[in-house]
Image (cartoon, rainbow, N blue to C red; front, side, top):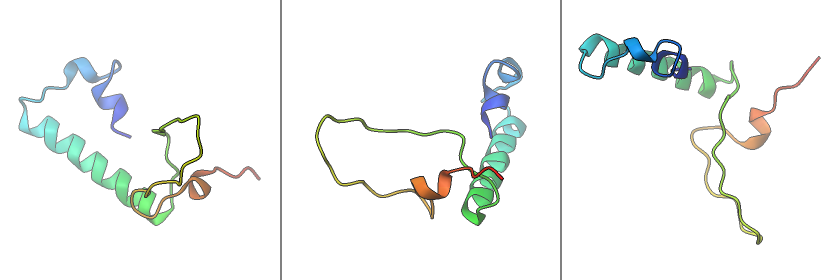
Amino acid sequence: MVDPFIERSFGPNFSVERDWDRAFVDRVHARDEAELAAGRIKPTHMFAVMRNMSVEAGPFAGNTSPALAVRHTH
């Protein structure tokens, strides 16, 4: 969720030198993590390691998994 505030749309107004800006991003990130952990929102980013051989999946952060990240349509 923090991306819009630090990327092109608002990012030029963000300053790592300002305490309020850093605290705001920390608050948004904490809320994002809490909502993901509670299952009320789904992740919007994925990081993957791609290989051309079979390997076991590594640990997932928090209580998330690929299955829990799927958005079901009604």
